Image 1 (tube, rainbow, N blue to C red):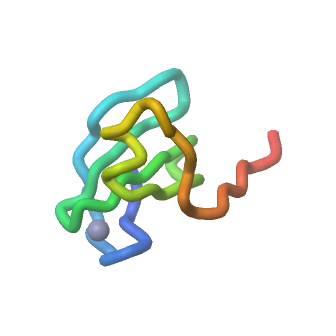
Image 2 (cartoon, rainbow, N blue to C red; image 1 turned 90 degrees about the vertical axis):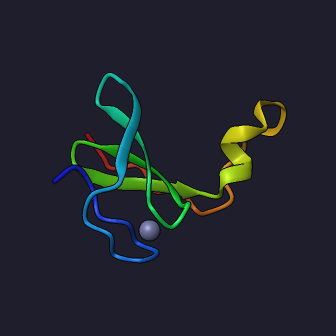
Image 3 (cartoon, helix red, strand yellow; image 1 turned 180 degrees about the vertical axis):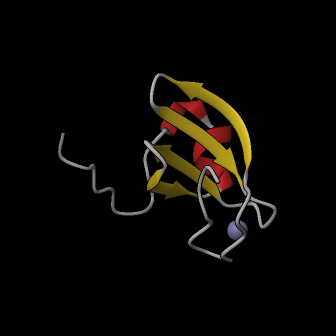
Length: 66
Ligand SMILES: [Zn+2]
């Protein structure tokens, strides 16, 4: 399991791309997820990633301590 959608609890969002330990996933409900090390660290609406000129997270982001 890569990540579970916090919005609809779908257990297998589709992997879209990855950068090192960070994985970008899209759920069947349209929610975007950012996963690091198997934990969802951020979620965002579709507009965030489709509009690169204003790439800001709409949800609070809590990065895990390393
Ligand atoms: Zn979902």
